[in-house]
Amino acid sequence: MSVRMLGLSRAGVAATLLACSVAAAMAACGDDGPSGPEPPDPALVEQGREIFRFDTYGDETFWTDTLRMHEVIQAAVDPTTALSVGLKVDAEALPPDVVQGIQSGAISLTDPATTVALLKLNAVVGLQGTVETIEGRDTLVRVGTTCALCHSTVNNSFSPGIGVRLDGWPNSALNPGAIIALSPALTAEQKAVYDSWGPGRYDPRFNFDGINGPVVIPPAYGLLGVNSVIYTGDGPDLAYWNRYVGVTQMHGHGTFVDSRIGANVQNPPDMISAKLAALQAYQLSIPAPEPPAGSFDPAAAQRGREVFEGAGTCATCHTGDLLTDANERLHDPSEVVSEPEPNGVPSYASRSATKQYRTTPLRGLLLHPPYFHNGIAATLEAVVELYDTRKGLGLTSEQKADLVEYLKSL
Ligand code: HEC
Ligand code: HEC
Image (cartoon, rainbow, N blue to C red; front, side, top):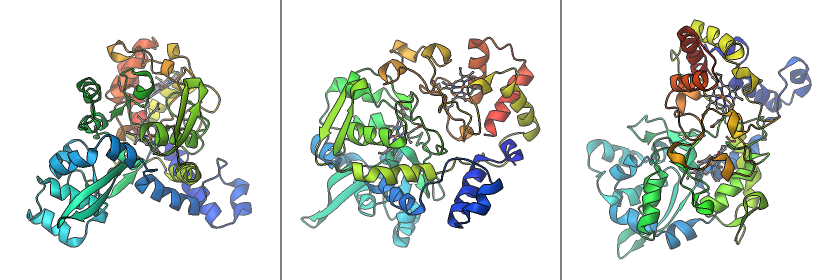
């Protein structure tokens, strides 16, 4: 039982709200039920899940026509290589004979043709392939990416990297830079930058400002009620950022304009605007996962909560049920403990629209290290140590240990 359950966990709140709307008994539910943001419409959520998992917004024109990833995949990316750069396989998309073939070894995991077969089955999370028979052979002719590439993983129920989809969980094993660097269309200089990012990191501003400062791929769960999005709070809703990524990073078709960052990208025809409402609804429907059973000490976590709210001064910014003041204010880079950036690159905030940071809502923490926008803290112990040193908190080692247990419980 998590410490937050002593009150009511966030997942519990979301579930209660959902139950109320489904029962259409809002009067009864609304009276003494928890107050909070309206849960998204279930029909829209359903549509949004399909979009999140399978829609490329037509970005094949970039990943295929420009980057020629279909050629590389077909020539050199066998399933073992694909798994090694963090790509995941959706076990539920595999028919029984394929499952058996993988188990018996009859299907080779070191043959790129198997990757093409998996793409044909629509079983590679975050990639959409079009496979045609050319001269009697299955041939990958188009490939594109979806939101699930970076924001879904699998539960490894079949084997490492192969399992049931977990949407909203950041794919911390995914090495987007290494994948992009496989493209034959890039210069050696460009490849060196992409290769430097490492797993779980991506720079969604590099193609605008040429600065190499990748950030940690964050969770896309537990965001219901947070009306300020991304590390730097650039927009009021997820649709703002979803359009940004869909058009300017995935290179899907549509328009993204924001004069604050000098962005004006026009890539007709518009294949994204009509999908944004459903896409946002789906993300808002994903609750933060509860910490795994037995992953923290409840008594220590309870004491840690007191440190969080008292001597640690954490609750001055991590306020309310979502543990963030994001709906009220942002913070100057001088207030965060994660700066200066590693490797001397300019502040990530300075590259954003707001030039500030949003207090990150704290949820599912144990499940998504490393921490802070730049991943400067590898563990929750390192987070607490950094705050203690940089803010001169003078916490005792017991207080620090308790605070870590509390963070694990979120
Ligand atoms: C190549 C990897 C990649 C892909 C593909 C991608 N994202 Fe992200 N996403 C990121 C990174 C990196 C950030 C952090 C950016 C920041 O905060 O400045 C992010 C941030 C987010 C957030 C966090 C919002 C918050 O307020 O905490 C959400 C939600 C999200 N993306 C949804 C999406 C959706 C929906 C799509 C598809 C349209 C998508 N992403 C495609 C890498 C990716
Ligand atoms: C001045 C406001 C402020 C205070 C006080 C504060 N935080 Fe934060 N916290 C932030 C901001 C802003 C971020 C995002 C910074 C970044 O990503 O670089 C953050 C990020 C974090 C993260 C990273 C979450 C993630 O998913 O990456 C953790 C964990 C955290 N804070 C814990 C704490 C703890 C524990 C304390 C008390 C010791 C504390 N914070 C005090 C504002 C604050």
